[in-house]
Amino acid sequence: MKINKELVKGSTSILILSLLEREDMYGYQLAQRLALLSGSVFELKEGTLYPMLHGLENEGAVEAYWVDGEAGRRRRYYRITPAGRTLLAEKKKEWQVYSGAVNKVIGFSKGALCNGQY
Amino acid sequence: MDNTEKYLDEVCSCIRSRSVHSNIRDELLSHITEIIENGIESGLSPEEAERQALVRMGDPREIGLKLDQKHRPRTEWPLLAAAAVIAVIGIAASIVANDGVYLAKTGFILTGLVLMVGIMFVNLMWLRRFALPVYLIFSAVAVIFDYHWWAWSARAMFGVAFMPGFIQLTPVLFMGLLFRRERFTALQTAGLCVLMALPTVNACLGGIMSSAVLIGLSYIFIFAVLSVKGNKTARVLLPVSVCLLGLQVTCAYMISPHIQDRISAFLTGGQSDPRAAGWLTAQLTALIKNARLIGPVSGGVPEMFSNLMSEYVLAGVLGRYGWLPTAVLLLTVAVLLWRLFAAAAKVKDPCGFALAFSASAVLAMKFIINILINFNLFPVVGIGLPIVGGGGSDCIVSFILIGTVLSVCRRRDLPPDSGPVRALGMTFWRKTADK
Image 1 (cartoon, each protein chain N blue to C red):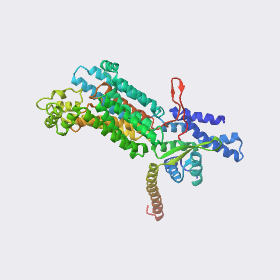
Image 2: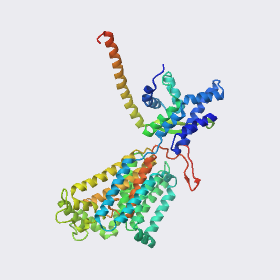
Image 3: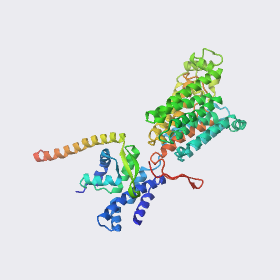
Image 4: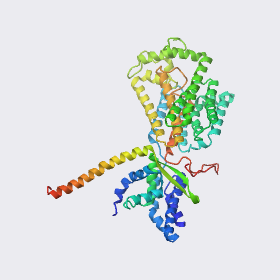
């Protein structure tokens, strides 16, 4: 199912931070993992990950370091910082409240309609 | 791979800060290469794999524009505005004082403003690379300027002195030394201590106790904050800087009789010697007691404080205009200091933070010491209210300090060490990796 782009946009940083909370990752790996875990629901253009990652880096939520791999390949890994963990906890809470509210409203109106109250 | 190159060129063409180009190119290239390699492994032709990879990456212009937003130089407008307000107050004070030097004073303030804005556009992170030579040259110049006759004649001609003013920049330069390495050996740390003591010893020898005390107090403040932030070398240097200040004060106290008199005057509220060393203290006590909310103090402003160009510009404002205008002036200073520290706090790179913070700390220390002196809360030392009540070199140094903060903050979203340093038509060094 294709998800509205605007809907994905607001929640990408929480997704990135949650993935980085488990382990340090580089951009390509992050894109793969995102597609895998979400069952390709969040099919965003992979290049757009970088403005978000760099934004999080500016905010001090993540920090980056280069690792030289085999065959002269260099990868820029991202690591979540303590400030990033705090931000993630806040965002998770925010998300719970928000999604809870959305569910309530959707559930409520559905239930109400079924009961024929409106 | 031509299309990949074109793709990367298009991304970078949208990013105005050139210093981030090489990092971003490397990062995106590594991503695209991995997609292509996976594509080839699964049986695609190299051309088809590249085409698909670039489609997966997305619109290069969109990505470039978004990255540009994340990596543009930042201007600290509130800090610039606060500095401009203080500059206007300084010019106004010298015109009101009407002692014939307001043209020179205005010239110094304008020169300082130009320097400040100029420094804002210079990347100061090279200080870390060239920290040792810069620091040694600076210390040597300090010695030459203090002990040579031509320095004194230059002072007489242009009103700019190196020692009391410019030596106050040493804590900022020292931060470059502190961040040259991640770890220092015991011997290197000892070397750092000697280098730290160099200018202050110099200032003491030159009889400029006020700058020595200022630098000593600033070092303690800076190292305390850096220690809390987890800098291991700062933790070693903190007790050393405390000892250094203690040593300076003890030496000064033992060598100069007038400093003993001043300190006794301070401790006794001027009563130890109300006609000489304690005179100022006694006058200030009377002024603070008699000042009105608005309007001149009854009985007239003592001669010493009527000149708004001296160290006692605050006492002068209090005597001439009362408590309310004095409070407004203090509030303006508080806003400037708040903006300085707020700007420094935004810098995440440890060396950048240390540079911005040390510059803020020295300037804050100057303001605070002068304010305390004016309210009889600190022994009398020759430190004027920066920009407003100080001399020419003090004025220029103060603006250089603000410029340092502006410069570091401007580049806070840019990688500190990436990109070449070009000067004199040569490229000096290039570091592509973060670590």
